[in-house]
Amino acid sequence: MSKENTMTVGQAFIGGVWTEIPVLRLMLGLCPTLAVTTSVKAGLTMGLCVIFVLICSNFVVSSMRHLLKPHLRIMIFTLTIAVFVTIADMYLKAFQPVMSEKLGPYIPLIIVNCIIICRAEACAAQNGLLVSVVDGFAMGLGFTIVLCFLASIREVLATGCITFSPTLVLTILKPVEAGGWFTPWASMLMPIGAFVTLGLMLAAVNQIAGKKS
Amino acid sequence: MDFLESLLVGFVGIVVINNFVFTKFLGICPYLGVSGRLDMAFGMGCAVTFVTTLAGGLTWLIDTLFLVPFHLEVTRYVCYILVIAGAVQLVEMYLKKFFPPLYKSFGIFLPLITTNCVILGLCLFLNLWQVDNIVLALVLSFGAGIGFTVAICIMAGIREAMELADIPTCLAGAPIALITAGLLTLAFMGFSGMIR
Image 1 (tube, rainbow over the protein chains, first blue to last red):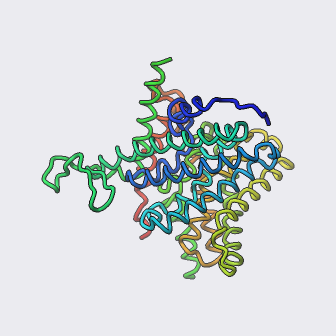
Image 2: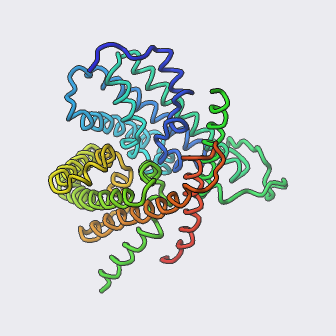
């Protein structure tokens, strides 16, 4: 294990939110991305949980990076992550029961979210505390941005509005039932909507990134 | 007879109707990552099926025999992930000893089965569905693995055929694979409603 930092704080931040943005560039963490993006609120909750778990697990892994034994590494990482996911899950169950019900097993499934293990391995095990925590925050932020973006596309096309709570509904396209012109696309809520929207988003990012180089 | 029927219904249901990849979005990473070649995809599917069956059965036993009677539900996720990591280690050792060529061709993907969401997802769903006997738990675990194998093999077949197709550069690779996967889910949706 090297003792020097392999990147600066600034590089870690930019890496997380653009050059290595988790879902779109690294192709990691696809399962929750596809599963929870039926509504913006679910996507946001998921994103915040991932930010919390990433920061905490990066902090712990980074503080014990000199003690890690190569063959037990992955085991230690998953156990660390599992502990923080349990905390996040209990918090949601206590304070956000509706969201917890809706996300169901996808919250515990954060344990096997590849982004978190990838950051523990690629960043936290080799860098100091500050860089690791910033990296965790930036990666989580990038993940949350992608989730919210994808969720807003899907939710608007599927229902015509974004629902934050029963009283706070943001209507963007007025559906036919409410006297508007927009016919909601039911397929956007189904698996196909998730796959095709994410595929097109990836294509758009490839196009933009390809032009630059 | 009722018991056998419930087993059969559960198995068919989890393989085609509630296929984990197509309806629950579990195991998407290996589904897109390893589906380049048909033989690798099949090998991956077999390994995952073995690990899910083992892990599904073991976690069910641990859950009913230890966690619930002793009120230790809070450690559930930690226990599950430990069992899965152990099962994967077992498969790795077995393959290394008896099938070295297969072991070499898997490379990094073998340890990565630990982080395959199908397995942890299945253990959590067994808990959520409140499966109450070990035989049903084993059949469902095996079915989930078979469902994953079916999905990844279909995908690998399509991607092998697609290699010769003329795809716009920005869509090449992952984007077109995602769109293909989307169309496949549409096909599998035709099965919904077959069993209640």
